[in-house]
Amino acid sequence: MPSLEDELFPSTPGKFKIDRGHTNMNRQFQRCFASTSTMFLWALFLIALTASYLSFQSFVDSGNRYITASWGGIQWEKQIRNSAHIQRPAGMSVLVTGAAGFVGSHVSLALKKRGDGVVGLDNFNNYYDPSLKKARESLLNRQGIVVVEGDLNDAALLAKLFDVVAFTHVLHLAAQAGVRYAMENPGSYVHSNVAGLVSLLEICKSADPQPAIVWASSSSVYGLNENAPFSESDRTDRPASLYAATKKAGEEITHTYNHIYGLSITGLRFFTVYGPWGRPDMAYFSFTRNILQGKTITIYRGKNKADLARDFTYIDDIVKGCLGSLDTSGESTGSGGKKRGPAPYRNFNLGNTSPVKVPTLVNILEKHLRMKAKRKIVEMPGNGDVPFTHANISLAQREFGYKPTTDLQTGLKKFVRWYLSYYGYNPKDVQ
Ligand SMILES: O=C(O)[C@H]1O[C@H](OP(=O)(O)OP(=O)(O)OC[C@H]2O[C@@H](n3ccc(=O)[nH]c3=O)[C@H](O)[C@@H]2O)[C@H](O)[C@@H](O)[C@H]1O
Image (cartoon, rainbow, N blue to C red; front, side):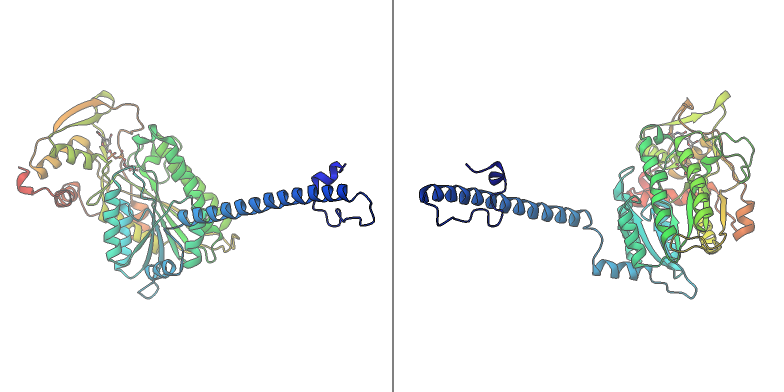
């Protein structure tokens, strides 16, 4: 009888040598035959195992190819390098995250126009109509700017981008925006504004040379602050929304990376930015759409029937603020994850310095659209809104000459003109 060991390990070399001197040939033959067929079965099993392993590997490989299909390869790298190519003396090569977004697309075009190299990154998520993002991307493409489709949390993609281009600057504008949406989808704020930010900083800190980073914080960090106008030295530890809390977290996180790794960091506290190619989720945009469609608009009102007010800031002024910040960012001091000395850490308000009440904003829209709004006034729900915002911009003025020049009347006129042409309304129909 074959031992258990024989059964389990039938292919052990030399184990089944035929003993020719044995008289019981038949038995020998049977044993040998039995062993051979077991060997055969095991061989079959091994072949099947190898085949399944190989096909699994090829499935994994093809999966990876699918995941990375939108980036990688010699041709792709060439496009990225062309896009990042600097065309002016002492120019910069900038990675703009959120490049297909409102502010990102405007600043990318301005950078390219003055001869800087720009590579965009955007995940084209569907927080609002992605076709608007695609339309902005087309504008950028026409100026030779490539927008890579990918998420901040894709560390392999970020590493690849820094392999291909030694970016001098990162303008980090990709974020989950919107104050009130944070109650519906809190996870998206953590994903983009916290995890995504850290993922980007990790790559930047390890880069050699390290880029200088300018990124979008928010006026919302002032939260329940009542000192007006808001100064950078005011309290920012009482956020009123999760959106604000993630932006405040961003300011703390970037401080850490500045402190440990010597990254140059500039945070920009944007005050309710508006203008052509804007964000459809914002009040001025959705009010315009609803007024044109004859739908009722809801206007929130604060305590004691006080109107809410915002320091609405026109996009062209914000673009100038972004360029000024990039130009004065100073250099990161570290390389390859090691700090070599202190680097700049700055936060600036970029606002308009003249708050306007929301009902006044609606009056201006009515005038430009030549249509009456159907208004419904409701008490401000506890949704993260703050009663007013008002920027003190003296710090940005001093540091890089920031000076907003567009008032809400003028800015909304430009917005309405863009809106009507983009969405195909004939202004004559809008009487
Ligand atoms: O500065 C910022 O850091 C933020 O600015 C922007 O937030 P907000 O100032 O809240 O702008 P926005 O939504 O246009 O509401 C404007 C006003 O209309 C009121 N509002 C709004 C909607 C509505 O239906 N009714 C209404 O009265 C509303 O109560 C508010 O008083 C960006 O979206 C945000 O991403 C961030 O960048």
